[in-house]
Length: 73
Image 1: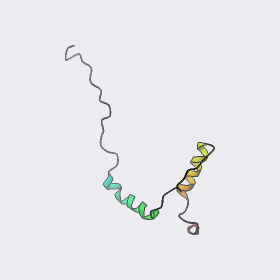
Image 2: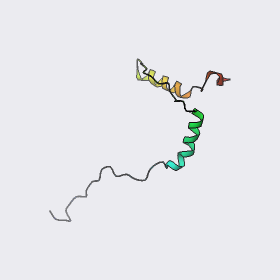
Image 3: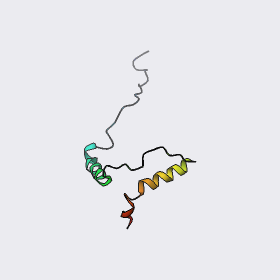
Image 4: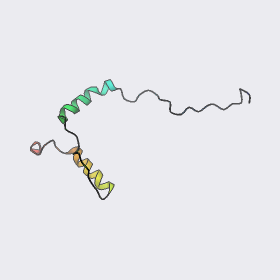
């Protein structure tokens, strides 16, 4: 096959520039760690749900709940 008639080679998996710079988000991550006080966003354990919708609703409730019941006021 002639050099001129070859099709261009396709490159799969080439990485471009990173979308987020770790140094830029470091401050935000540190603030989140302080606010969480080392506690996880969601309780640990195995939970069973009847549907994905029910699981998603529970997950949203856990992510948006106050840190403790006294902080609601």
